[in-house]
Length: 72
Image 1: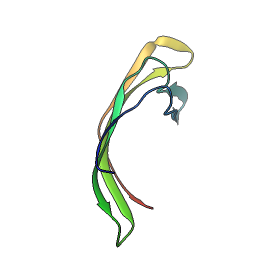
Image 2 (image 1 turned 45 degrees about the vertical axis):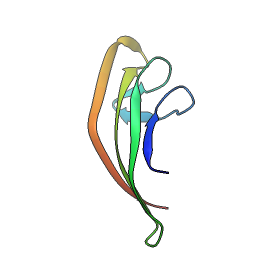
Image 3 (image 1 turned 90 degrees about the vertical axis):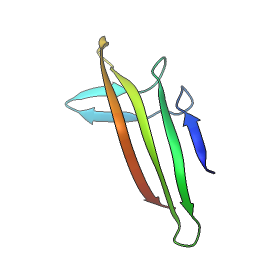
């Protein structure tokens, strides 16, 4: 469904690059579905989120201007 979705505790995800950051708890984020192609079975959209280092809660990163095209 088209629209913007708030990322919260119900939407858990983890990114790993030497240090583990997570987007759970009090971090913010959104996924915005911009296209749903039912014929070619592709969903497209944008996203952003904040994530916190699991070992150091003062260490946060922001992922901005994310974009995706996924086969469904």
